[in-house]
Image (cartoon, rainbow, N blue to C red; front, side, top):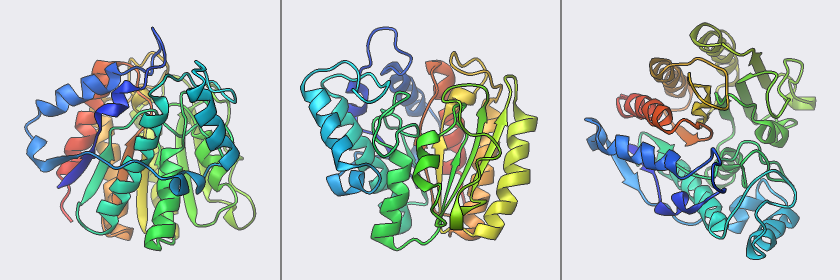
Length: 314
């Protein structure tokens, strides 16, 4: 079974009228997933709250306290970044952390083959001391640290196919040789990071791999990068857990991106990641939702992604 992590609180996070990161994203996903013919191979799981300890594995206490204070004081935007929030945003963000950490627990202990976390708000732009780019806590980075500290996982691969570069994730692990971070993204585009010369520092040199492409990139460029750059790197690194920052704003017709991936391309990318997980990590893979701002297109891409996850055979 594939674990499908979801909680209604994720739809309570509201960034304001007309904001692209809206509850409609999850509403579209849940409606389409409920209509699929493979839903019987997905187990929808309501997660626990995340803990302060899990959040503090990546973020500073000062930042966590500031998020709490900002939301309690009903600020519409976090004071240290461009992330719009509402009264329910902290509860949603804490539950997103709990969701992905619970997914790691389920997959690492073998209770589920793999997992997709349909969480909001997204996370990959959030750094140690700031939230930005619609993100509050860096869910995928927290998941990696949770796996290392709770399950003694030594090496984690994080692959990010969002159209925007995961600058917060890169920042977290830039000097850490226990994490291989791989990203395909559009450039130039927010947050204007992720150039090829950004490859890591010290013992982690070479363990950050950035593949930026111009607007219009699609199957050839992005799947080509996964096959030609990521697979050899993973063969050398040999991850014990595979994580995906699954941003579907790299899909064709997304309003915030200029890439041209199709639903079939996302299925192929998912298959590549499953092959890496099968070869090196006992099949252990956890994927978490990042971007994707055309609700109907997002839902179709998530369906293709989840169908491939649910079809996995160890």
